[in-house]
Image 1 (cartoon, rainbow, N blue to C red):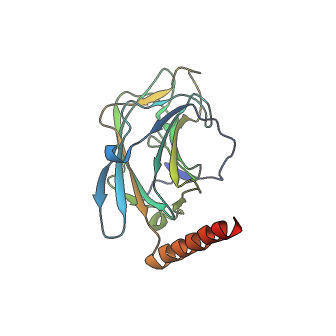
Image 2: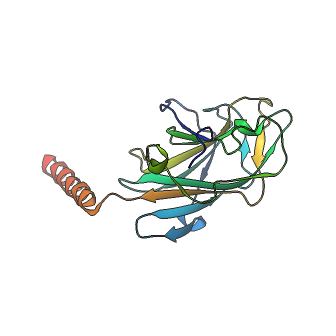
Image 3: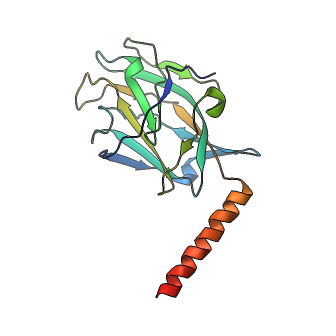
Length: 195
């Protein structure tokens, strides 16, 4: 069961500024295939938590997932170090501005190279949360931010070496894919006819 304080769902926010922006190439991801889902392991070692959500200083990771994809599970095995007076509970990872994960939730103190692990992939719906829906750009956006800024502009926390997050996603059922393909054909034909 997911620690409800570690993961929370909030309404999506708009108008966020994007600063340091990292595109994760599909070849950099270690994929584990299963019958129903794909799991991507993303190395987050060295990623800093700079400022409040939406700040131009924050680090963003994006990668292409495709049409109709939903993130159905998350996992983490991270080593967190806070800087100065920052607390572990403040370091937060936002997924598509739909779901927010604070691996150090409840640890309202500073720490050094402390491990937090989910113990595997946690299914979102089995834990009372909605799957994360990917926007029309077909790209999953992940933001690393701090909920209380202690060191403005210089970072409040960092993931140490060996830190990874796991993103499990599912594709729509074959009938849904067929419908999406059919809709694409109709749209393409309309465009050609209109010319």
